Length: 561
Image 1 (cartoon, rainbow, N blue to C red):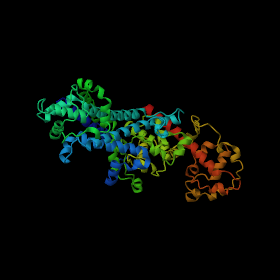
Image 2 (image 1 turned 90 degrees about the vertical axis):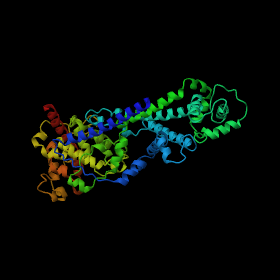
Image 3 (image 1 turned 180 degrees about the horizontal axis):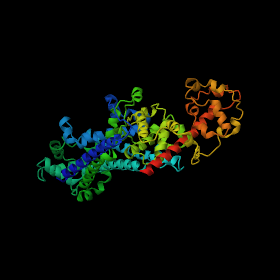
């Protein structure tokens, strides 16, 4: 009765947790849509085959990291076998003829599955050590506004790591208690007496002593009364064959539990006196109930990953139509593994700028927080937007994501999310800012927090003083040729602004922001001026200025609220 109450209580907690998670996702979706300019019209395309393959065999994880895939494979398939053929053995025995958990090869397979799960969990624990953990996965969303604004070191996502470690330890406790439980039951005399009472009518005068003698010799049973005759009782063998052999053969196939029983054999009577086997059963059962209750919270990605993997990838046509919304459910599938950031095409930008908002796995955590809470932290929003603007949408992160999240869809949705929250991209910010506002109250064009301030080409007169305003660069510029009406300044005029000491005005020029970096102007310049390099430098410094202006505007909005 107590077992049923505990089981039903855990099931209630599990179902309540699932309802809470799904309601939270739905609530976030509704609150996100309300009052936003972003239109979240999510189109549900399904990729059933890809979802099944990634859920069952983790094919994406195999491409990303072989060791991590092996650990997942061991845990998933080992735990799956234990769930079907051990935890649900009453149901399983009705479908598989001849199945009995106490006979070979099922004893061996149960121990093998337990070893698989244990090895996989130990591998997970080792990977969480700083020595084995990828550098990028140690960088969390909280490090976005630290990486460039304050120059402080990145912090690890401690909450997520703690939850993961707790889940792993619970699974290890479940497997370990299972091995110990089987070992104590192998040698437990009270357990043997209970089975005799339940499945036979034997007593001391009717073959019980002979059967007990046989089990002591062949089944590693430990009893208090050891006054048996030498040799194997033929009667005991017959009793065993008649009453026991169909369900219990020799436990030697349990290659983990049987050696454990041999090690603890000297303590067998003491363990039996205190019924340690029953205590271990309660402990083993308790681990199962705790894992079941915590599944919607610490292991929800096991539910979210199949859903995320089953969705079709975004297409260029969808991006042009702007009809793809923020997928809150797929966001919960992220395990913060960091593989996406390791293959990111613009990772060198992070190495140069120090903006952690460039890294895909960091952006996911920041986007989740922003979707829930809005622009709570202006610094994070500004740097996240700049980091997402650096993304080339090459899709390498989505190709390798073990959880099957369509990250390209997510980056596009995040752009519209931030636009709706009043945080446009830097290009838009530049042309929406008046020239007076751009140049008034000069702001630092280069953040000295993490990058040493070194004068660039635009700060050294000798880089551009030889410009003779021949306009060869402007005549060769494809930007000027394609859209002369919208291009206010040619490259030669930008050089002239630098000579006049008007670098702030130069950074706001459409020429600087529309430059294609084809290097035609630089290659044809008769004075050998590094025109394209100067334009790129001005654009980079303009990015910082646009970020600072957006930050001041968003901070002002927060103050008004």
